[in-house]
Amino acid sequence: MSRDPSQGGVPASPGRSTAQVTGGTAGIGAAFAAQLAREGSDLVLVARTKARLTEKATELSQRYGIDVDTIAADLSTDEGLARVEARVADPGAPLDLLVNNAGFGLPEDFLDSDIAAEEGMLAVNVRAVLRLTHAALPEMIERGSGGIINVSSVAGSVPTATGATYAASKAWVTSFTESLSMLVAGKGVTLTALCPGFTRTEFHDRVGVSRGGVPELLWLDADDVVAAGLRDHRRGAVISIPGAQYKASVIGSRLVPRSVLRWMSARVTAGA
Image 1 (spheres, rainbow, N blue to C red):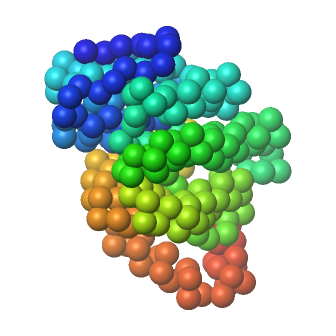
Image 2 (tube, rainbow, N blue to C red):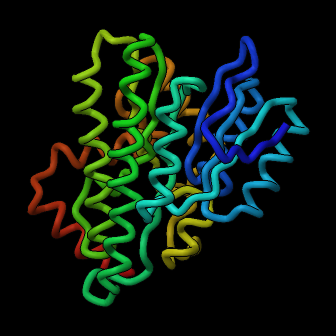
């Protein structure tokens, strides 16, 4: 059954877990929703567009026999974020898993972009992750169980002239998750930063990344990214980097001096 609750959340069906996924109607978020639904988890899906939410909720509910709540909200606004926060913190309908997936980048570089757009990106990529995590943790810690997956990016591990704010926001997500994992150690709660590279979703189309301009070897499938993220999260990994090629690149970036990374990034940008 799909629902659009106006007041609070609806308790999960007996014996089933409940997961909330922001940005749950497209890309990696939709892949999370589908995988969790296949496993029998009830869902709370969050996205900006009510029509897409209704369509996705109906599809998953009918196909997998689960309950799906939906919240149409713009996480860049105070009102939208507050509505989602209230659901996350609702003690009457606790979450077993929170997936902070919503996020976006901009097609222009920092010098050409609108400052309001840059601030909106930070509101979704950083502030929403901060506040929803803060809302979820007290109940999870009191219960002694639960998990949070914050979707970051390998872009946060290297300096980049293009997408500077996006990369910085993802560096923050990774560092934030890693630090909190230390704070909640031993309390029964698992936090994981999922750091994919180029993934076949709408995201890269929106920011103007041509799939033909990126070697095929570097492209990941959203379902594979989610499978890796859930597997790593369930074994207690704090950082999940899907794909051997990206694991190698992140490890390499930690060994190379930052000045060299900046030079390499500038050369790649100049050749793009």
